[in-house]
Amino acid sequence: MLICRCALGAAVATAATLMMAAGVAAAPVKCTKVAGYVIDPDPKGVNVRSAPSLKAKRIGVIPKQKRGTVVDIQASDMGWLQITRAENMEGKVTFKGPGWVHASRLGVSLQERHKRGTPLYKRAASDAGTVRWFSGPGDNWQATLISCAGGWLKVRIKRHVGWLAPNNQCGLPWTTCP
Image (tube, rainbow, N blue to C red):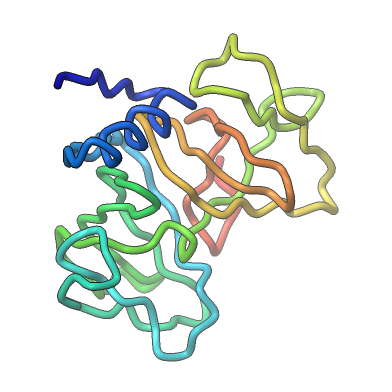
């Protein structure tokens, strides 16, 4: 049985669900030039695994840092993100991969590029329509990661889920991006 795995929006979840039901493993969705940062409050740090599963071998731990740790993301698979490295503010590499981290342990900040604020899209496309606009300097919106596709990130902001365009992402926890 051949099922097309599309790299955008709801098609990813639908195709992955069909493939799991059929007993077929889905290939991870590739990400391009995507970064995030650790948001997990666990003082023991964030576990990095050899595969996208809690049962997979732990191959590293990203230590908890007061000022944050940035990760480079290269793929997503069923709620997990494959990272290639983690680096703290001082430039110290704390993990060199690849390895897998549960998406809920990572986040990004929003960058306002429009007068209305930052749009959260229904699909990974700027013509998809918006779920909601987020704005205001006092809001300091932080998004929890869910998955990625290309340069887009699927995120959760409070109770809203949608796609964040590449130019609206800030993967640095210690500054607002330019």
